[in-house]
Amino acid sequence: MTRTLFTLSALLLGYFMLQMSNGLQGSLLAVRADLEGFGATATGLVMSGFFVGMSVGSLLSGRMIERVGHVRTFSALASTASAATLVHLIVIDPFVWIAARSVTGFCFAGLLIAVESWLNASIGSAERGRLLSIYAMVGMGAGVIGQLLLDAADPQGFMLFVLVSIGLSLALVPTALSQALAPAPDAASERPSIRHLWSISPFGVVAMGMCGATLGTFFGLAPVFAQRIGFDPSQIAYIMAAATLGALVMQFPVGSLSDRVDRRWVCIGLALAATLTMGTLSQASVQGYGISLALATLMGGLLLPTVSVVVAHINDRAPPDALLAASGGIVLMQGIGAAAGPFVAGAAMDVFGPRGFLMTLSLAQGVIVIFAVLRLALKQGIEPEAKAPYTPVSMTPVESELRFPDQT
Image (cartoon, rainbow, N blue to C red; front, top):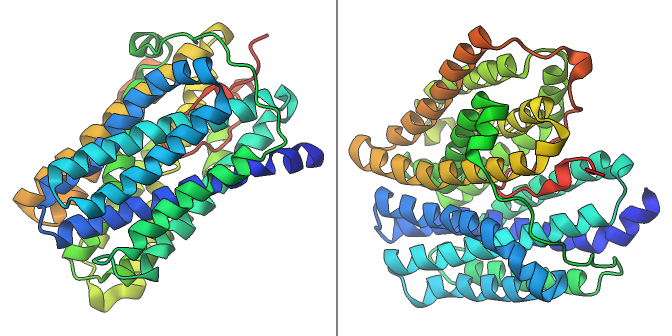
């Protein structure tokens, strides 16, 4: 495993650079759009554009990899994403930003699928669970650092946009020079099917959509929420980093609990605790910055690990021959939710003020609770010994078959 990780370290380093740049860019665009007076609805649409692009890219980028291979696909998409970042500086207009952000989302879908499928083909099934855990931790750790970089320069200037572009460009270097052998392109995999996923787990369909809405809303508009209740960009950087760190720290305790009890009960507990935390957070102010950091850490630790729990719940119930179709359905539902969440939250913030952000998150968590209770009444849980092992997953709404064992 050590030798394998050394060989794959270049791929993981390239992935680290991608996620670090993505973490910085998301918060930077939210803060800058609000400073430019876009309005919460327009800012929400900019954030939604990323997830719309990711959803489209997750459906089409596989064909690109089939035609030209992993290295060329990664190089082309990383270069395009780097260029798209600078477009936000050239034309400061909501419609241009929505288009540029959609292009970035499309590129990230292909980049992550290329990395994940490359990793998947480079390691045996016995070691895949450990690699997936490392992969998820690398992504979340990179997100923490990316959020902290928001404090490196003034968001109203050009330097942070340049840093994002540099990070995306540098992601090419370790990937292009990696000694890991790129796999031969596979034939197109089974098309995503929400209907198929519903037949496996109705709760999984609804919960994954709400998880997507939560992720899209939180990472898209939390900086706007924080800015509107009085925090400056430097403080916002640490608040967002604290939330991402909270998600990283809570992954394994939450996963361990969900391996022992019905995962739906875990989702209910997380959702209810997160809603209570949001109620407290709504009272936060600049005078309570230390408390706000603690609440943000707790909020991230409660909201974001739910994705991994829901994926594990679906894996528990999916037959071996349905895992790839289930994976596609997960991608699609999470992408739909992530695209809708920021728009709904932005509109709510324009109507209700900053609390519209918390209202949207609370609504998504409430749907998870209600549907989980309904499914608990209708469907018996799985015994702990029959469950698939829990592994953390990336919080980005593009996942490949990497999480699944070999189907041979």
